[in-house]
Length: 247
Image (cartoon, rainbow, N blue to C red; front, side, top):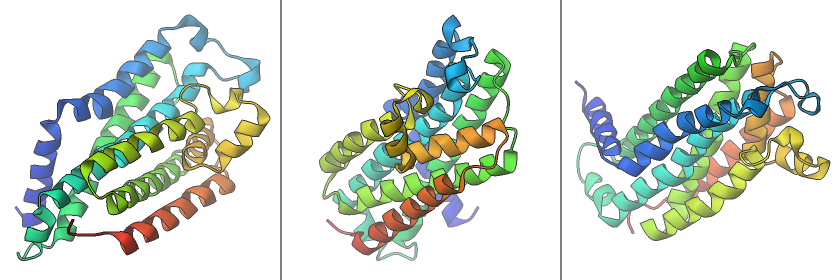
């Protein structure tokens, strides 16, 4: 087994030893989807939602939830902790560059997000008759761009946060507005027109709408894809230019 594969496996084990991270990233989104799906009113087609049901709208929202949670909370906290403890600095003196550790963190987070994606799609389909994405290629493109945008945001938080306390605080400050505009508390289709317009130009709002379009059988809107791409480029550039290996 290559050294990088060992590093990824180690990071996966460390992630599995964090009960709260496993709970919020893996267990909570499917559980919440099941709870919402058990509400009879959420399984009724509604004209003001374009003929969709509330449960249909919540599958992409739950996917966004886990991507956002791991990107802005789990990932920055782990990297900030490694920086505080001097792990990144010590790795710089070994044949294994510190950048491999960051890449291993990203791989573990992406694996968790893909796992939960499959769980949510499966639970939605089997449990509540939510149709699988009717435009699978568009759904894949949207999902990859969502990953890039949110992981870039998480890396930017990790880059600018001086310690884990600040990292955790920034992550929570970002998480709630992101999920609001992503439709967690109020589906975007049910928002007032002004909020819907604002949501379109936030990374979470663009993500939910791009995934929703692909799920309904349309190619994701180019505006939403452009917004996600723009955030990925901007956040990623800031993260790279401001990242510190040592505290």
